[in-house]
Image (cartoon, rainbow, N blue to C red; front, side, top):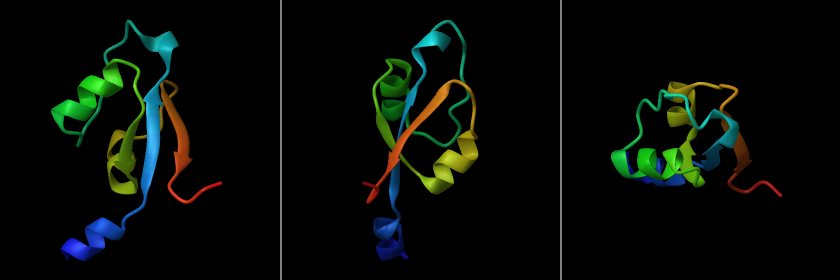
Amino acid sequence: MEENKELQSTITISRNPSYDKHKLRTVGLDIDRVIKFNNFEKIEVTQEELDAIGMHRWLIVHKEEGEL
């Protein structure tokens, strides 16, 4: 099962700066990535984590691993 987790592609996301005053729901992320995300840094998540967070106006999806 561990190998399967390593093979999961990652998706780069960040927080939309225009939502800086809003509290956002970041279910399933560890505290280090939540802090980076709330500081408007790009973070990597799996598709499963992205599904848990959901697609919102405040979420910017930059690219999936392997995408050109």
